[in-house]
Amino acid sequence: MDELDLLKKDWKKTNTIFKEVSELELYKMLHKSSSSIVQWILIFSIGEIILWTAISFYSSTDDYLKSINHPELEIYFDAISIFNYVISIGFIYFFYKKYRQISTVSSTKKLMNSILRTRKIVRLYVKYNLFMIVFGMLLGIFTAFTYNPAIVGMKEKMQSESSMMAGVIVGVVIMTSIIVGLFWLFYRLVYGRLTRKLHTNYKELKRIEM
Image (cartoon, rainbow, N blue to C red; front, side, top):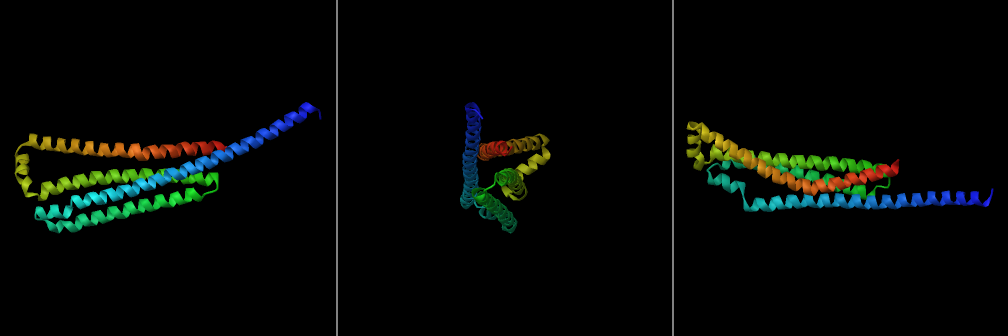
């Protein structure tokens, strides 16, 4: 073997080692980045439940129901609130579980699977929250029109004037759409941005695995 062949062989060997080192370093960075992203998802979800709990202290549903002389409805609203807290805490638990999995995983394939599952859970979490916002608004409107004595006069006018009823319905739809749209925008900016980063990491890991 001449000197040129030896140089070529040595260059190929060095290039292969360099590639392996580069991929290992890239994996470590993607691993750390993915763990950090899921940690932020966990922090934001905990922050949300704390925020909604704080808001509930300033706008008590029980006080409102007592003010319209229908305290018997408290048990139903409390049941919905407890159900929502249980589901929200369940999501937080899954986010924490995924954070722990991603932080300790040592396989590229397992990391990729954990990223995919985390993104699915985040999407489900956002859909659930948007659904509960719509449900809560419609329930509040229904309760007000059905049980609030202050709206009895409006109900009688709506029954006699179809144009007024149409206006109220349009107003409710517009108000609901605006509020849900704002929440959707918030979730897209926060959770959407984080899940897009996870997707980018997933594509990079997939390229390494090939």
